[in-house]
Amino acid sequence: GVFIEHIDLISIKPIDFDTLIKSVSKTKRLLVVDSGFEIASIASYISHRINQVLFTTFYFVPLPLRAKARTVKRLPHRY
Image (cartoon, one colour):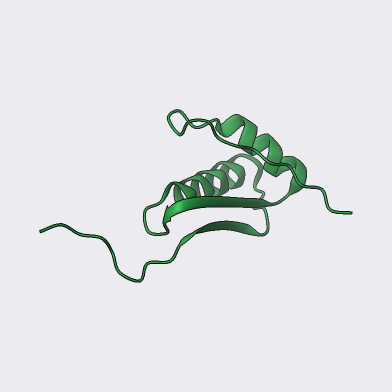
């Protein structure tokens, strides 16, 4: 069977990294889904922080560590 642990972040300020780290330590996987663009997104920030904390604390890098967001075809801009 497949074991999935779903964590829905109610707010992103502050981000509950303790819950995320406990989940990644238990499941050894992380998938962050974001509706924003993939460049400088909250998904890339969360995956970076989880990777940084787990590597510096436990010398453990979860595999696979993925962040899914919209691909950038054309960035929105304002003149």
